[in-house]
Length: 167
Length: 167
DNA sequence: ACCTGAACACCGTTCAAGT
DNA sequence: ACCTGAACACCGTTCAAGT
Image 1 (cartoon, rainbow over the protein chains, first blue to last red):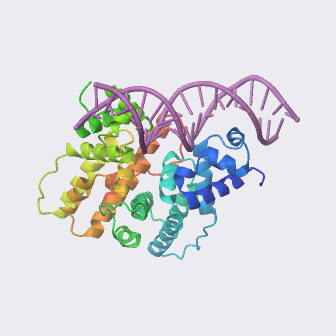
Image 2: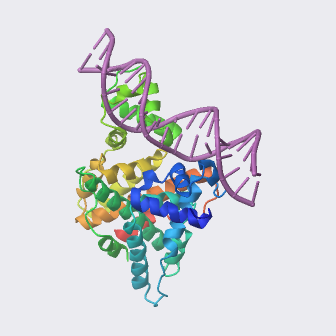
Image 3: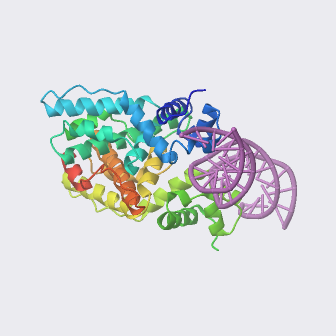
């Protein structure tokens, strides 16, 4: 199909994620998409985790943040919501981002975008935790419902509502 | 070894988690611990996810919360920190709890304990998200460091610090 | 009621060998 | 420089068959 590059690899990974979910983003599945042997991927990426990292970077690459207005509360809320919506928009992206962020294999842009308008590190940390936590709890619940599993309600508030408690 | 019960199953699962991490909590590995065939487990639990659910329930079963004092801020902070510390105490328990809570296969006690002392649902949700988010980001970073991987710092604040922004 | 054995359809990663 | 083929050491789940 197309030539294998880190960028093309993460694009294909994101497509598989959106269409089939995180479980189907396997090295073998990605390789099949390029019509190459699995082992060929290991020339372009160190391991699966670094592919996942590249995917998160790619996901956030298309988000552009408005320049700071001066009111940090508004700025922080706007940016956090923009990131939240981007993550929630793609299936399993919450789980993916959580894993990548935690292992530090990508997603640095996320923290930078928040840090730029945040008054201090603790607030940034709180927003990040809230973002990842809420997205994880919310998104997977959506899926479970889609699969017909009835779920004990965990999070029912919107991200915005919880956000306002911090900001 | 011992007879296979749901309870004994989750105890063994938690032991494997603590000693070898979530990746090593496989149905095959658990079966080996009981010296039975993998398929034997499926008579006792529906699937792996329900085993993980039982593990989280078992993890929180030993936590006992002090009765409400009347001051919800103190109560909520104390309980949240107690849960946080319990989760952080066992390797990979953050990731486990996040997954279980999200899929609703266990961990109902967690939300109940917070709800009992929380002024409203939004606050409970915020605390839960903060708890899961912070624990996930923090714990996996610890591990990555242990593996010698150098990680871009994500969360540096303590849970307590971020908690105080909400309460 | 409880367990075995075998099968099915997968995984991530490595590595000698090829072009 | 880039890729193949084969192997290694695993997965979760199902199901007929046994006791």
